[in-house]
Image (cartoon, rainbow, N blue to C red; front, side):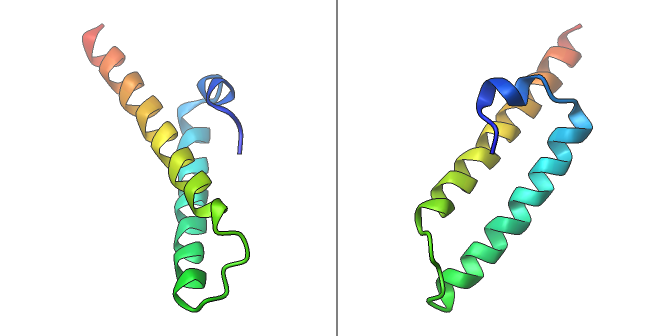
Length: 68
């Protein structure tokens, strides 16, 4: 996953695609956790944080577009 400054340089479509991929991964991680097959528990936190960063960036862009 890219860091937050790298996310700022991406287009809205790229962010939406990345968000979809992360949500899919989050679902798979939750499924693995439920079946006790999770190899890297720290990845759950990383994915959750990345999703939050993308959503924050999207809402910032939406607010700035509305104020113009």
